[in-house]
Every structure is written in C-alpha cells, then in structure tokens.
Length: 77
Image (cartoon, rainbow, N blue to C red; front, side, top):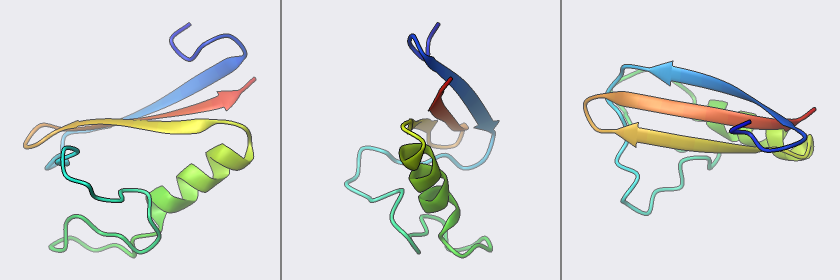
C-alpha cells in the first residue's frame, strides 16, 4: 500500500495553477496564501494538516506550475 502499513490515504487532485514548491514558502501556515488573485482565507491547508497530524497522520503535496497539484492525506487505519 503506498500509504504504508497501518495507514490509508486520500488524494485530492486539481488542474489549477500549481505551486512552486522549490521556494521556501510555508504552504501549511495559517493565513498563508500563494495565489492572491483568487478568494480564500488561507486557513484550509493549515486545518487539513493540523487535523491529519492530530490523528497521527500527515499530509504530502506534489505540484507542477501550470499543471496542478496533488495533495495526499495519510491517516492511521
């Protein structure tokens, strides 16, 4: 299982603008917004990460500029 033994995974794919993960940006920081031209409060990814970590899991992200992103949430079974 890609999530590893004892874990399940949930993936969310989007075909949006993508993120430049090479820069030292704090993607999961509260109120952090990487695209200012769209609406949002900057707390969504922060909350997802906190919920996953509090449950004993983690969140991973893969992204390509201009192609979109894949967010994977790993949670214990």
